[in-house]
Length: 235
Image (tube, rainbow, N blue to C red; front, side, top):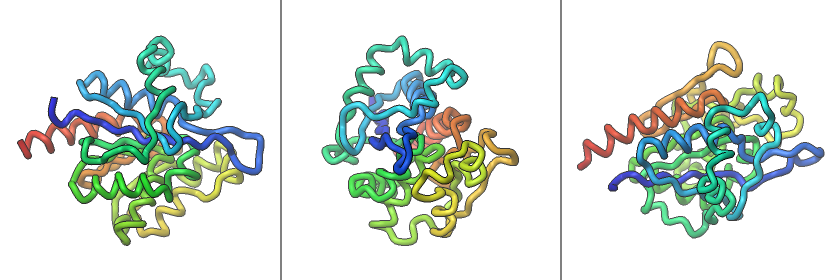
């Protein structure tokens, strides 16, 4: 089916450097959007900088974070196999995909923000007016676009995990930079929910971003909505 190929770009980074804490992909920020796309009839490809199985943030596996989609994933051998065998980003041909989606977890702060393959892939998406979604710390990947399109982020309406939220989850001293501050330094028109950890989704043309784990499904739904309009109009 035409215009149904989704590329998930996931982190390969596991360690909160300088501590014993672990990070990686936040499970619900992967599973919520993954099943939204699958159930809407899209084909999803999973890719990481290193290939193979990405680390999953241990906190996102805890009982209080087991959403319906997480529980579905635990019973879905095909999805588990796909996650255990992600493709390396360096072999991804961006022309083959209609949508890019970047889940969070703190890992992207280390390995997606300045990754040359992320820059190559997402620059293609910008140039080709394709749709990109990113959640929580996933918008760190947008920083890579600046390698090829200087000033891309200036005045873009974007959200991400906020500085306040970092302090509340006690991770602000363990990360290389605060994503909200880094995005603001690039001139982003940043916004957030009235209260921390509430869902907040922002749309700027073909770019959809979400603030935190609770925003992941909303971002996916908005991306699907935009894709249906966008790709219908170009047929």
